[in-house]
Length: 336
Image (cartoon, rainbow, N blue to C red; front, side, top):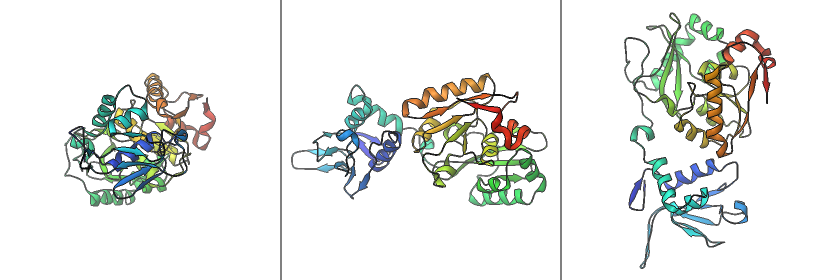
């Protein structure tokens, strides 16, 4: 935590600079960052087009005091071009905002939301009409996955939805025999399981986590980042986790919003990754087309690039398309 303009900001200078680097990844700004212990040296974004060979711009990690003045954490000084600013002014200049107050509001808006939004915590989760189960932990995730491996019925159900056994393992899918549901653990960007989504094998109903914000995560994002997938890889954006997993089972990387809407928190999660090439594969209905327009409106300003799809088959979503046409499903989609 640092203090800016006498206001605590719930982030470190290091974290803020890493987030800014991801936001400006397409432009190559702030690409090189070196923590010296007292400062973070970054490539100055204000001379040589932001692409100098060696980082010459220092951003102080902590408050510094001299006999004449106190400099807040986040004070910026470029030793090459002479640029000097406090952190809100640096944010203002980086984004081209109107004034430093806008830069200050950006810091507060990005980092000073509630503790539940920032801390990775374990939630109770809802898996049926009986309500909540005990708080989950790593042992629970492991046990549910073992249950799945031992349930031929659950495995066959997922295979029927075109999800391979290797993908079941990679995404730690689970099974709870007491409620007869398959479980889809949803991970935070840092690798903690936030909650489960569940699919009933008997009644074929989905159940969402109760009392948690499912719009705070993008399904599949953690596995992509953690797996070291190359940054220029194309990623398909879909609505449901089953859509995503069936694509991944056929070698197509995919993320899911777990609904027909993209939230501001999910936008932030995507911005903080280096991935910028996407195919919009939301559902083949009006809600899906509306979601596609919203995705582009929110992400194009951050340098994201998209392909659209025109459906050449009368099916609802990607998973139904794969179920119907198998490995030939690509032939029923036209990219543009």
